[in-house]
Amino acid sequence: MTESQDKSKREDLLRLPELLVSSTYVGSSGLSKSRKDRITDFHYFRARLHGNHMFLNVAEARTPSGKVKRRYLYSLTDKKMKPLERPS
Image (cartoon, rainbow, N blue to C red):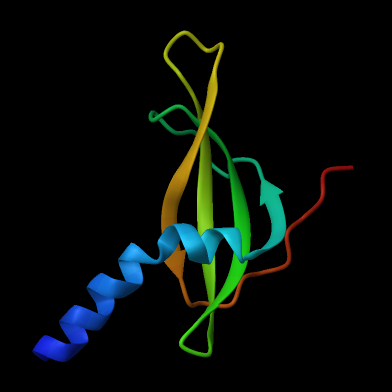
């Protein structure tokens, strides 16, 4: 990676809050497998970065007491998402 590409990626990371605010909510899903990190759900948002679609994946987890939910950016991806299955 060139120095300019590295600088561009760092600048993109600094813009993450702005990117999330301007994103479009796609949907949410529960877990497909059990986890040990207290994550209970994922929320998906679509945004554009440099003209390309990106997905911001936000995790929802409970604190150790189980009383408080917290949400945080879990990952970014440029892959196409499968349609979310809605619970019946």
